[in-house]
Image (cartoon, rainbow, N blue to C red; front, side, top):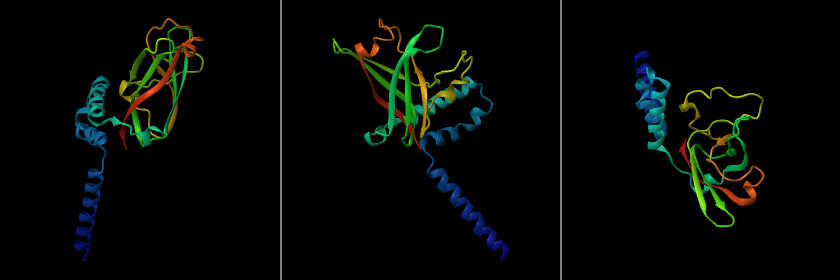
Length: 182
């Protein structure tokens, strides 16, 4: 009788594991498929695998999920004291996706010319004193996780506009987002 019960438990456990594997999202499945490669890899090597898995699994957020993402824009020094200006995105990700990229459009109000900027790395904006000397390996900054919020640096290159003039001269909008669904 014990032998039969053990057999039922083994079959039941195998079915649960098989079901869990079957419902894994494509990103997680890709990472599981490459787990052995990441074990001995350098952080740069792991980042190459993470980026490849993201590219194979990411998709555009549909309008319903996109509506759950809130983005506000600030413009200022990305790192205090170094002078480089850029956008600071305040993001609330209420979607069921881990966001992998956001495309932002800057439209000149006078000429109606639009420039698009896409960002795929999410380094937190530091409001505190001092300079952050390291954000860790790149692969740890590839996502804005689902149901989280934060402020992220978004470099846009050199614009001939002061901090006070950016929003007077340009309309700034989040155009699209890509992500990995849970």
